[in-house]
Amino acid sequence: MNVDIAIIGAGPAGLCLARALGGMDLDIAVVDPVDETALANPAPDGREIALTHASRATLEKLDVWSRIDGDEISDLRDAWVFDGESSEPMRITHEDGEAEQLGWLVSNHLIRAAAWQAARECEGIEWLTGRRVESTLPGEHRRRLVLSDGEHLDARLVVAADGRFSGSRRSAGIGARMRDFGKSMLVARMQLERDHDHVAWEWFGDDRTLALLPLNGPHASAVITLPHERIGQLKAMQETDFNREVTALYRERLGNMTLIGDRHVYPLVGVWPDRLSAERFACIGDAAVGMHPVTAHGFNLGLTGVDLLVEEIGKARIRDGDIASPRRLAAYAARHRAHSLPLYTATATVVGLYTSNLPPARLLRRVILRTANHLPPFRRAIARQLTGTGGLIERIVQR
Image (cartoon, rainbow, N blue to C red; front, side, top):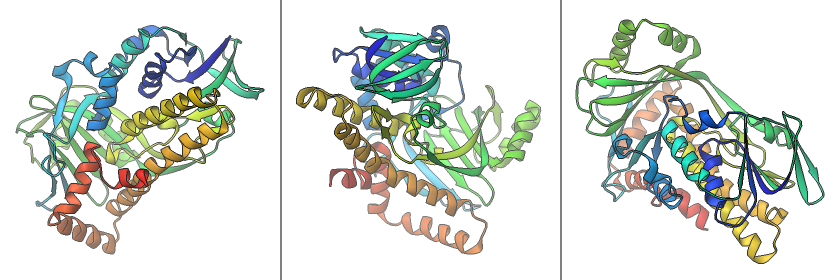
């Protein structure tokens, strides 16, 4: 089979890319080991995605946003950041971001289902589901995919969208630096006794990071980061004991907390590929950068990558006709790196500083939060970055 573009992975980034390319008169194939029934009805995985204004605009353009039930979209109005036992947080408000709210929270599985529906309506897409990509081999003007059923697929451009531990990226000869943060993250939906007022809370302790993502009604997603062994113990607890332990971890600031769903655990590993492209090959989504979730920017960066790659493909079709020319792929990679590197580096620095038990680090982070809370320009810069309406990263990219 010959196609113009083969997308490896039908996660949110891969599906959004397929949808974005669907109106460009290209032959596209999407390969994923999951069958169509599971792709159409993805199981809840506990992850709540914080979407910026820019990401919402992209999802609206792709006709994905309208397919998400409005009752399942939660406003993210403000964000408070606490350090240790401090009762005075750094407050980042929607006024700082010059918007009605900082963003929105949507469950990952609902985004996946909506993106699947939107992409399925596009003509010219071949769905090769229930099959894995065993290897990729460069050839003259093409790259060949060898599938698990023995079929060969030749594409002018292959796009890896198969996650931070991408097998296709490795097959294309692209290495990656992985940073294991030595902890795991447990996520669970909880019912709260007190109102969260649609404020996201984050606490940085000496051996833990706690986040609370506000959902509609008296509900929130508890995001608990602890050493692997302690997370395992927390997941294995009886429900009554779990509720008591989580309520205590959050210092009863929102009253009693009661589990209303399943518990999901994820290891925390950041991934930074050595490069984002090879011969007729490009990476998007988590295959392009695997972020620590503390900044909630993973999927937002994925959508940025979709926009950038589609733009470069569009330029290539107009100017030289080769959608996978080295020049175009290099331009995509450079623009993506300019956007993602500051966030990736800043995230690693924040995580390192706010999980250190060393006395100098404790002192420094308290000084930073106390000072930042009294510096409106600094808060506005953070808020504008969260909303996706401007800030440090955009200024770097535009230079």
